[in-house]
Image (cartoon, rainbow, N blue to C red; front, side, top):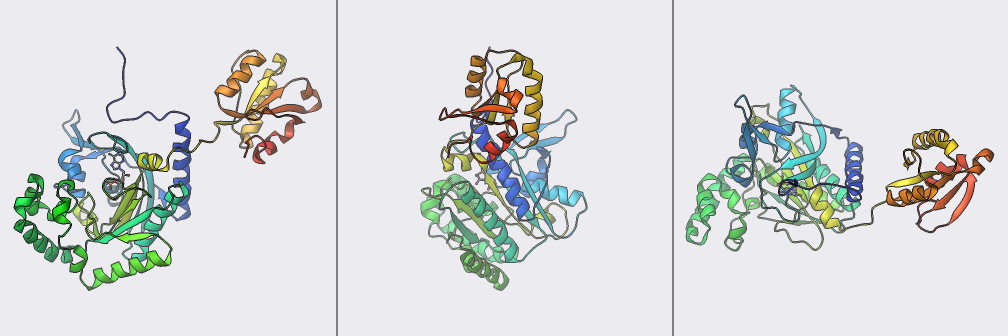
Length: 414
Ligand code: AMP
Protein backbone atom coordinates (compact mmCIF):
# COMPACT_ATOMS: atom_id res chain seq x y z
CA UNK A 1 0.00 0.00 0.00
CA UNK A 2 1.23 3.52 -0.62
CA UNK A 3 -0.19 6.59 1.07
CA UNK A 4 -0.95 9.80 -0.72
CA UNK A 5 -1.87 13.20 0.76
CA UNK A 6 -5.61 13.90 0.71
CA UNK A 7 -7.04 15.34 -2.53
CA UNK A 8 -6.62 19.10 -2.81
CA UNK A 9 -3.76 19.30 -0.28
CA UNK A 10 -0.09 19.97 -0.95
CA UNK A 11 3.21 19.06 0.62
CA UNK A 12 5.47 22.06 0.76
CA UNK A 13 8.98 20.77 0.27
CA UNK A 14 12.35 22.36 -0.51
CA UNK A 15 13.31 24.20 -2.62
CA UNK A 16 9.79 25.72 -2.94
CA UNK A 17 9.36 25.71 0.83
CA UNK A 18 12.10 28.35 1.03
CA UNK A 19 9.93 30.77 -0.92
CA UNK A 20 7.04 30.00 1.45
CA UNK A 21 9.17 30.75 4.50
CA UNK A 22 10.47 33.91 2.89
CA UNK A 23 6.96 35.17 2.14
CA UNK A 24 5.68 34.23 5.60
CA UNK A 25 8.58 36.04 7.23
CA UNK A 26 8.09 39.16 5.19
CA UNK A 27 4.39 39.08 6.05
CA UNK A 28 5.23 38.98 9.77
CA UNK A 29 7.69 41.80 9.34
CA UNK A 30 5.49 44.10 7.27
CA UNK A 31 2.40 43.61 9.42
CA UNK A 32 4.49 44.35 12.53
CA UNK A 33 5.77 47.50 10.88
CA UNK A 34 2.15 48.59 10.51
CA UNK A 35 1.54 47.89 14.20
CA UNK A 36 -0.28 44.54 14.00
CA UNK A 37 0.51 42.00 16.72
CA UNK A 38 0.66 38.29 15.95
CA UNK A 39 -2.41 36.24 16.92
CA UNK A 40 -3.06 32.51 16.63
CA UNK A 41 -6.48 30.93 17.02
CA UNK A 42 -7.52 27.24 16.83
CA UNK A 43 -7.69 25.42 13.51
CA UNK A 44 -11.16 24.24 14.50
CA UNK A 45 -14.02 26.14 16.05
CA UNK A 46 -17.64 25.42 16.80
CA UNK A 47 -19.64 25.01 13.59
CA UNK A 48 -22.11 27.67 14.75
CA UNK A 49 -19.38 30.32 14.80
CA UNK A 50 -18.96 30.03 11.03
CA UNK A 51 -22.65 29.45 10.32
CA UNK A 52 -23.40 32.73 12.06
CA UNK A 53 -20.24 34.66 11.35
CA UNK A 54 -19.73 33.74 7.71
CA UNK A 55 -23.44 33.37 6.92
CA UNK A 56 -25.80 30.42 6.42
CA UNK A 57 -26.60 31.30 2.82
CA UNK A 58 -22.99 31.45 1.64
CA UNK A 59 -21.19 29.00 -0.61
CA UNK A 60 -18.63 28.43 2.15
CA UNK A 61 -21.16 27.43 4.81
CA UNK A 62 -23.60 25.63 2.52
CA UNK A 63 -21.08 23.47 0.70
CA UNK A 64 -17.48 23.87 1.69
CA UNK A 65 -17.07 23.23 5.38
CA UNK A 66 -15.18 20.33 6.85
CA UNK A 67 -17.54 19.70 9.75
CA UNK A 68 -17.46 16.83 12.20
CA UNK A 69 -18.70 15.69 15.54
CA UNK A 70 -16.08 15.03 18.20
CA UNK A 71 -16.28 12.11 20.63
CA UNK A 72 -18.43 14.14 23.00
CA UNK A 73 -20.87 15.06 20.24
CA UNK A 74 -19.74 18.68 19.76
CA UNK A 75 -20.23 20.10 16.29
CA UNK A 76 -16.89 21.41 15.10
CA UNK A 77 -15.54 22.73 11.80
CA UNK A 78 -12.04 23.14 10.43
CA UNK A 79 -11.76 26.89 9.91
CA UNK A 80 -12.64 27.99 6.36
CA UNK A 81 -11.33 31.49 7.17
CA UNK A 82 -9.79 33.21 10.16
CA UNK A 83 -11.70 36.46 10.81
CA UNK A 84 -14.54 34.81 12.76
CA UNK A 85 -12.01 33.06 15.04
CA UNK A 86 -10.12 36.28 15.73
CA UNK A 87 -13.36 38.09 16.60
CA UNK A 88 -14.41 35.20 18.82
CA UNK A 89 -11.02 35.33 20.60
CA UNK A 90 -11.28 39.11 21.15
CA UNK A 91 -14.76 38.80 22.61
CA UNK A 92 -13.88 35.75 24.73
CA UNK A 93 -10.83 37.49 26.21
CA UNK A 94 -13.03 40.43 27.21
CA UNK A 95 -10.86 42.87 25.27
CA UNK A 96 -12.14 46.32 24.48
CA UNK A 97 -11.16 49.20 22.26
CA UNK A 98 -8.79 49.09 19.34
CA UNK A 99 -6.99 45.91 18.48
CA UNK A 100 -4.72 45.20 15.53
CA UNK A 101 -4.01 41.54 14.93
CA UNK A 102 -2.06 39.72 12.21
CA UNK A 103 -2.07 36.02 11.43
CA UNK A 104 -1.09 33.35 8.96
CA UNK A 105 -2.06 29.72 8.75
CA UNK A 106 -3.96 27.00 6.95
CA UNK A 107 -7.68 27.14 6.17
CA UNK A 108 -9.90 24.36 4.86
CA UNK A 109 -12.65 24.39 2.27
CA UNK A 110 -14.19 21.50 0.42
CA UNK A 111 -13.85 22.87 -3.12
CA UNK A 112 -13.15 21.27 -6.47
CA UNK A 113 -9.37 21.35 -6.46
CA UNK A 114 -7.46 23.11 -9.22
CA UNK A 115 -4.47 25.44 -9.44
CA UNK A 116 -5.01 28.17 -6.85
CA UNK A 117 -8.05 26.44 -5.40
CA UNK A 118 -7.06 23.93 -2.75
CA UNK A 119 -8.86 22.12 0.04
CA UNK A 120 -6.15 23.16 2.47
CA UNK A 121 -4.68 26.58 1.69
CA UNK A 122 -2.79 29.29 3.53
CA UNK A 123 -4.19 32.63 4.45
CA UNK A 124 -2.25 35.67 5.63
CA UNK A 125 -4.37 38.38 7.13
CA UNK A 126 -4.90 41.28 9.46
CA UNK A 127 -7.91 42.49 11.42
CA UNK A 128 -8.19 46.08 12.60
CA UNK A 129 -10.89 46.12 15.29
CA UNK A 130 -12.48 49.10 16.98
CA UNK A 131 -11.83 51.70 14.27
CA UNK A 132 -14.58 52.99 12.06
CA UNK A 133 -12.81 55.74 10.15
CA UNK A 134 -12.02 55.21 6.46
CA UNK A 135 -8.33 55.66 7.30
CA UNK A 136 -8.43 52.22 8.92
CA UNK A 137 -9.80 50.72 5.68
CA UNK A 138 -7.08 52.55 3.76
CA UNK A 139 -4.33 51.28 6.03
CA UNK A 140 -5.47 47.69 5.61
CA UNK A 141 -5.74 48.01 1.82
CA UNK A 142 -2.32 49.67 1.63
CA UNK A 143 -0.68 46.98 3.75
CA UNK A 144 -1.95 44.19 1.48
CA UNK A 145 -1.08 46.16 -1.63
CA UNK A 146 2.47 46.82 -0.49
CA UNK A 147 2.92 43.21 0.48
CA UNK A 148 1.82 41.98 -2.93
CA UNK A 149 4.16 44.42 -4.68
CA UNK A 150 7.00 43.22 -2.43
CA UNK A 151 6.18 39.64 -3.43
CA UNK A 152 6.91 40.63 -7.02
CA UNK A 153 3.35 40.52 -8.26
CA UNK A 154 3.75 43.66 -10.39
CA UNK A 155 0.86 45.92 -11.19
CA UNK A 156 -1.81 44.67 -8.83
CA UNK A 157 -5.15 46.49 -9.11
CA UNK A 158 -7.42 46.84 -6.10
CA UNK A 159 -11.09 46.41 -7.01
CA UNK A 160 -13.22 48.32 -4.52
CA UNK A 161 -16.86 48.78 -3.80
CA UNK A 162 -19.13 49.83 -0.96
CA UNK A 163 -22.10 47.66 -0.11
CA UNK A 164 -23.43 50.00 2.57
CA UNK A 165 -24.49 49.65 6.17
CA UNK A 166 -27.33 47.50 7.44
CA UNK A 167 -29.66 50.49 7.06
CA UNK A 168 -28.58 51.27 3.46
CA UNK A 169 -28.87 47.64 2.62
CA UNK A 170 -32.51 47.31 3.53
CA UNK A 171 -33.58 49.61 0.72
CA UNK A 172 -31.04 48.13 -1.65
CA UNK A 173 -31.94 44.52 -0.85
CA UNK A 174 -35.60 45.00 -1.57
CA UNK A 175 -34.87 46.92 -4.80
CA UNK A 176 -32.43 44.21 -5.88
CA UNK A 177 -34.79 41.39 -4.95
CA UNK A 178 -37.56 43.01 -7.02
CA UNK A 179 -35.22 43.51 -9.94
CA UNK A 180 -34.05 39.89 -9.77
CA UNK A 181 -37.61 38.64 -9.44
CA UNK A 182 -38.54 40.36 -12.68
CA UNK A 183 -35.81 38.33 -14.38
CA UNK A 184 -36.33 35.16 -12.43
CA UNK A 185 -36.72 33.02 -15.57
CA UNK A 186 -33.21 34.03 -16.72
CA UNK A 187 -31.47 33.04 -13.48
CA UNK A 188 -29.90 29.76 -12.36
CA UNK A 189 -31.84 27.63 -9.84
CA UNK A 190 -29.46 28.56 -7.08
CA UNK A 191 -29.78 32.28 -7.83
CA UNK A 192 -33.57 31.95 -7.83
CA UNK A 193 -33.44 30.39 -4.38
CA UNK A 194 -31.20 33.17 -3.09
CA UNK A 195 -33.43 36.03 -4.20
CA UNK A 196 -35.25 35.67 -0.90
CA UNK A 197 -32.53 34.40 1.41
CA UNK A 198 -29.62 36.56 0.26
CA UNK A 199 -30.10 38.60 -2.94
CA UNK A 200 -26.64 40.20 -2.66
CA UNK A 201 -25.06 36.81 -3.17
CA UNK A 202 -26.65 36.54 -6.61
CA UNK A 203 -24.33 39.32 -7.76
CA UNK A 204 -21.30 37.06 -7.55
CA UNK A 205 -22.96 33.95 -8.91
CA UNK A 206 -20.70 32.84 -11.77
CA UNK A 207 -23.58 31.36 -13.75
CA UNK A 208 -25.58 34.59 -13.69
CA UNK A 209 -22.99 37.21 -14.58
CA UNK A 210 -24.64 38.24 -17.83
CA UNK A 211 -27.98 38.96 -16.19
CA UNK A 212 -26.64 40.69 -13.09
CA UNK A 213 -24.23 42.93 -15.02
CA UNK A 214 -27.18 45.32 -15.38
CA UNK A 215 -28.45 44.99 -11.80
CA UNK A 216 -28.88 48.02 -9.53
CA UNK A 217 -25.65 48.97 -7.76
CA UNK A 218 -25.23 49.14 -3.97
CA UNK A 219 -23.34 52.48 -4.21
CA UNK A 220 -26.49 54.13 -5.57
CA UNK A 221 -28.25 53.28 -2.30
CA UNK A 222 -25.67 54.53 0.20
CA UNK A 223 -26.86 56.86 2.94
CA UNK A 224 -25.02 60.11 3.70
CA UNK A 225 -22.44 58.56 6.07
CA UNK A 226 -21.85 55.53 3.91
CA UNK A 227 -21.31 57.70 0.85
CA UNK A 228 -18.92 59.98 2.69
CA UNK A 229 -16.94 56.97 3.91
CA UNK A 230 -16.70 55.62 0.38
CA UNK A 231 -15.68 58.97 -1.10
CA UNK A 232 -12.95 59.37 1.53
CA UNK A 233 -11.77 55.88 0.71
CA UNK A 234 -11.46 56.58 -3.01
CA UNK A 235 -9.69 59.89 -2.41
CA UNK A 236 -7.30 58.16 0.02
CA UNK A 237 -6.47 55.45 -2.48
CA UNK A 238 -5.55 58.06 -5.07
CA UNK A 239 -3.51 60.02 -2.55
CA UNK A 240 -1.57 56.91 -1.55
CA UNK A 241 -0.80 55.97 -5.14
CA UNK A 242 -2.71 52.70 -4.95
CA UNK A 243 -3.94 51.47 -8.33
CA UNK A 244 -7.65 50.80 -7.98
CA UNK A 245 -10.80 50.37 -9.96
CA UNK A 246 -14.37 50.72 -8.75
CA UNK A 247 -16.16 47.40 -9.07
CA UNK A 248 -19.83 48.33 -8.53
CA UNK A 249 -21.08 44.76 -8.25
CA UNK A 250 -18.29 43.31 -6.14
CA UNK A 251 -19.83 41.71 -3.03
CA UNK A 252 -17.42 38.90 -2.03
CA UNK A 253 -18.19 35.45 -0.76
CA UNK A 254 -18.76 35.98 2.94
CA UNK A 255 -21.84 37.58 4.45
CA UNK A 256 -20.36 39.74 7.14
CA UNK A 257 -19.14 42.71 5.14
CA UNK A 258 -20.52 46.25 5.50
CA UNK A 259 -19.47 49.34 3.55
CA UNK A 260 -16.03 48.70 2.05
CA UNK A 261 -15.24 45.51 0.14
CA UNK A 262 -12.11 45.01 -1.95
CA UNK A 263 -10.09 42.45 -3.84
CA UNK A 264 -6.54 42.40 -5.17
CA UNK A 265 -6.32 41.38 -8.81
CA UNK A 266 -2.82 40.58 -10.13
CA UNK A 267 -1.72 41.80 -13.59
CA UNK A 268 -2.92 39.70 -16.48
CA UNK A 269 -5.79 38.28 -14.46
CA UNK A 270 -9.47 39.06 -14.60
CA UNK A 271 -11.64 39.37 -11.55
CA UNK A 272 -13.42 36.05 -12.09
CA UNK A 273 -11.83 33.66 -9.59
CA UNK A 274 -8.46 35.37 -9.69
CA UNK A 275 -8.29 37.49 -6.62
CA UNK A 276 -5.14 36.77 -4.64
CA UNK A 277 -6.80 38.30 -1.64
CA UNK A 278 -9.47 40.61 -0.44
CA UNK A 279 -11.33 41.89 2.52
CA UNK A 280 -13.54 44.61 3.78
CA UNK A 281 -15.29 46.21 6.70
CA UNK A 282 -17.49 44.16 8.99
CA UNK A 283 -19.08 46.51 11.49
CA UNK A 284 -21.91 44.12 12.36
CA UNK A 285 -19.89 40.96 12.91
CA UNK A 286 -19.11 41.38 16.60
CA UNK A 287 -22.81 41.85 17.49
CA UNK A 288 -23.66 38.84 15.38
CA UNK A 289 -21.29 36.79 17.54
CA UNK A 290 -22.87 38.14 20.77
CA UNK A 291 -20.00 40.56 21.28
CA UNK A 292 -20.04 44.32 21.89
CA UNK A 293 -20.73 46.97 19.28
CA UNK A 294 -17.36 46.91 17.51
CA UNK A 295 -16.44 48.10 14.03
CA UNK A 296 -13.71 46.26 12.19
CA UNK A 297 -11.93 45.97 8.86
CA UNK A 298 -9.58 43.28 7.64
CA UNK A 299 -8.03 41.45 4.76
CA UNK A 300 -6.98 37.92 3.87
CA UNK A 301 -4.45 36.98 1.21
CA UNK A 302 -4.06 33.49 -0.23
CA UNK A 303 -0.44 32.40 -0.12
CA UNK A 304 -0.97 29.55 -2.61
CA UNK A 305 -2.36 32.03 -5.12
CA UNK A 306 0.33 34.62 -4.49
CA UNK A 307 2.98 32.03 -5.22
CA UNK A 308 1.33 30.83 -8.42
CA UNK A 309 0.70 34.41 -9.60
CA UNK A 310 4.25 35.55 -8.82
CA UNK A 311 5.64 32.77 -11.02
CA UNK A 312 8.77 30.88 -10.15
CA UNK A 313 11.57 33.14 -9.11
CA UNK A 314 14.81 31.25 -8.49
CA UNK A 315 14.82 30.59 -4.77
CA UNK A 316 17.82 31.75 -2.78
CA UNK A 317 20.39 29.10 -1.91
CA UNK A 318 19.47 26.82 0.99
CA UNK A 319 22.77 27.31 2.80
CA UNK A 320 25.42 30.03 2.79
CA UNK A 321 28.29 27.67 3.46
CA UNK A 322 28.94 23.96 3.83
CA UNK A 323 31.95 22.95 5.88
CA UNK A 324 34.20 20.32 4.35
CA UNK A 325 36.52 18.70 6.89
CA UNK A 326 39.71 17.67 5.12
CA UNK A 327 41.43 16.39 8.23
CA UNK A 328 39.25 14.11 10.34
CA UNK A 329 41.09 15.13 13.51
CA UNK A 330 39.51 18.52 13.08
CA UNK A 331 35.89 17.28 13.22
CA UNK A 332 35.01 18.65 16.63
CA UNK A 333 36.78 21.89 15.82
CA UNK A 334 34.67 22.10 12.65
CA UNK A 335 31.50 21.68 14.70
CA UNK A 336 32.62 24.47 17.03
CA UNK A 337 33.33 26.66 13.98
CA UNK A 338 29.84 25.87 12.62
CA UNK A 339 28.30 26.97 15.91
CA UNK A 340 30.16 30.28 15.73
CA UNK A 341 29.09 30.88 12.15
CA UNK A 342 25.46 30.08 12.98
CA UNK A 343 25.56 32.51 15.90
CA UNK A 344 26.78 35.14 13.46
CA UNK A 345 23.67 34.48 11.32
CA UNK A 346 25.35 32.32 8.68
CA UNK A 347 23.29 29.38 7.41
CA UNK A 348 25.86 26.67 7.73
CA UNK A 349 25.95 22.89 7.80
CA UNK A 350 28.28 19.90 7.57
CA UNK A 351 27.92 16.12 7.30
CA UNK A 352 27.45 13.88 10.32
CA UNK A 353 30.26 11.39 10.83
CA UNK A 354 33.16 10.46 8.59
CA UNK A 355 32.91 11.04 4.81
CA UNK A 356 35.58 11.47 2.19
CA UNK A 357 36.32 15.04 1.02
CA UNK A 358 34.78 14.17 -2.35
CA UNK A 359 31.58 12.95 -0.68
CA UNK A 360 31.46 16.11 1.42
CA UNK A 361 31.73 18.31 -1.69
CA UNK A 362 28.92 16.29 -3.25
CA UNK A 363 26.83 16.81 -0.13
CA UNK A 364 27.53 20.56 -0.34
CA UNK A 365 26.11 20.60 -3.88
CA UNK A 366 23.14 18.45 -3.04
CA UNK A 367 22.31 20.65 -0.06
CA UNK A 368 22.40 23.68 -2.34
CA UNK A 369 25.11 25.56 -0.48
CA UNK A 370 26.47 28.75 -2.03
CA UNK A 371 30.02 28.01 -0.93
CA UNK A 372 32.15 25.24 0.56
CA UNK A 373 34.60 26.09 3.33
CA UNK A 374 37.44 23.59 3.58
CA UNK A 375 38.99 23.04 6.98
CA UNK A 376 42.44 21.65 6.32
CA UNK A 377 46.10 22.34 7.10
CA UNK A 378 45.70 26.12 6.67
CA UNK A 379 43.59 26.07 9.83
CA UNK A 380 46.81 26.08 11.89
CA UNK A 381 47.49 29.53 10.45
CA UNK A 382 43.90 30.60 11.12
CA UNK A 383 42.97 30.25 7.43
CA UNK A 384 40.35 28.31 5.42
CA UNK A 385 39.80 27.74 1.70
CA UNK A 386 36.44 29.06 0.53
CA UNK A 387 35.07 27.90 -2.80
CA UNK A 388 32.16 29.54 -4.57
CA UNK A 389 30.16 26.54 -5.76
CA UNK A 390 28.58 28.35 -8.70
CA UNK A 391 31.71 29.81 -10.27
CA UNK A 392 34.28 27.37 -8.84
CA UNK A 393 36.38 30.37 -7.73
CA UNK A 394 38.59 29.52 -4.73
CA UNK A 395 40.30 31.73 -2.21
CA UNK A 396 42.21 31.27 1.04
CA UNK A 397 40.88 33.68 3.66
CA UNK A 398 41.13 34.08 7.45
CA UNK A 399 38.56 31.83 9.19
CA UNK A 400 37.30 34.89 11.04
CA UNK A 401 36.27 36.49 7.75
CA UNK A 402 33.92 33.77 6.51
CA UNK A 403 30.87 35.51 7.98
CA UNK A 404 31.90 38.80 6.33
CA UNK A 405 32.43 36.99 3.04
CA UNK A 406 28.83 35.76 3.22
CA UNK A 407 27.43 39.15 4.27
CA UNK A 408 29.31 40.88 1.44
CA UNK A 409 27.73 38.47 -1.01
CA UNK A 410 31.09 36.93 -1.83
CA UNK A 411 29.55 33.51 -1.59
CA UNK A 412 26.39 34.46 -3.45
CA UNK A 413 27.07 35.41 -7.06
CA UNK A 414 25.01 38.46 -7.96
P1 AMP B 1 -11.98 34.68 1.05
O1 AMP B 1 -11.95 34.41 2.51
O2 AMP B 1 -12.87 33.74 0.29
O3 AMP B 1 -12.20 36.09 0.73
O4 AMP B 1 -10.53 34.34 0.54
C1 AMP B 1 -9.44 35.21 0.72
C2 AMP B 1 -8.30 34.71 -0.14
O5 AMP B 1 -7.95 33.37 0.27
C3 AMP B 1 -8.64 34.55 -1.61
O6 AMP B 1 -8.46 35.74 -2.29
C4 AMP B 1 -7.66 33.49 -2.04
O7 AMP B 1 -6.40 34.05 -2.31
C5 AMP B 1 -7.54 32.61 -0.83
N1 AMP B 1 -8.40 31.43 -1.00
C6 AMP B 1 -9.70 31.28 -0.71
N2 AMP B 1 -10.13 30.03 -0.97
C7 AMP B 1 -9.05 29.36 -1.45
C8 AMP B 1 -8.82 28.02 -1.89
N3 AMP B 1 -9.77 27.10 -1.87
N4 AMP B 1 -7.58 27.69 -2.31
C9 AMP B 1 -6.58 28.61 -2.32
N5 AMP B 1 -6.74 29.87 -1.90
C10 AMP B 1 -7.95 30.26 -1.48
